[in-house]
Image (tube, protein in one colour):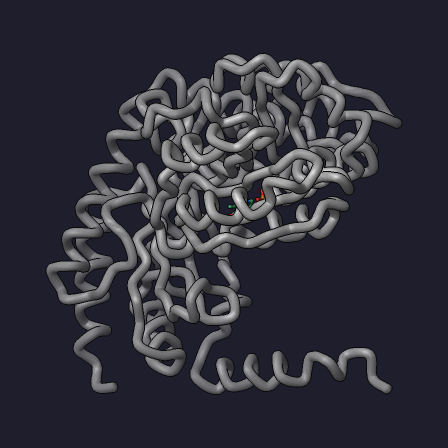
Length: 395
Ligand code: PMP
């Protein structure tokens, strides 16, 4: 039997997509020119699907730091910190995360995906239960699978449903680990974190972990995420995030005030058995953190762009999945229309994210835009015009 036979349906679906034009899941970017511009199929293209929220991938100081670290300390660490040693840069960046989040402990990981795998699987043991929001990211679900705890799902952004689930589990021994995100990356909606904190506090032995992957650097007066924006940070026990969005690198982090948090270094397999982040990624991330701390104008710029795009697309009659925010998800009626619109946009020099079921919550078909502080008002206006042209195409 062919070992790939189980993917016949995936292959058929992908073939149907290709018939419609370019491959939205394999789009090649021929040349990257800045945080917001690339050359795609020979055409100058505005990048509006990068998660490069603060545009720091091209920041001169971040690039300089990455280049210098690679030149001075090499291209890779070639092993895990447990087996092969910790670099000074790992510790410096962990100190940076402690300072930034005002937490006692911080651990860095090789990717954000691993940060979730490591943190969730190490925190929740066989005696415990995990309560996970239905719309959580794949890395959270995989963290739940890796953990030996039983996992229960509650309805997306529904603290009452979580409360009911916890009440029903009241007689179970062990701890309850509640896992939600700050900003959900597909629809662009934020979690009612203060309500989740209140539910957690009503139930004994409950702990709250928030993945602020998409909200770090963007939400809150200091950029600490949706928890900061909603004034409930101290009720969050564990914050997880990534270097790969606002922080413009590759890696992940987790922070906490729990006095035993450092035990994760001795218990979390995705930390212990994977090579640690590279010197250049650590150096650029450390610099990006400093930029976030010292340049509030970056946050002002992304919010101004988010408002401009949101208002423009809404004015053109598009249905948007959430209020103003760095993720602006345009709702499309079906897969065929989404494919056609995505192809028309790429031909018109606008790159957005193509998102269809099963990769989306609630069976939604989306053209997902992510705004950057580095976009100019002119670029945002061009995008709005291109969207309006696409919308007026015959179905
Ligand atoms: N959490 C969330 C909510 C994400 O969207 C992602 C990836 N986009 C990750 C974690 C994983 O981060 P990374 O890309 O750094 O592995």
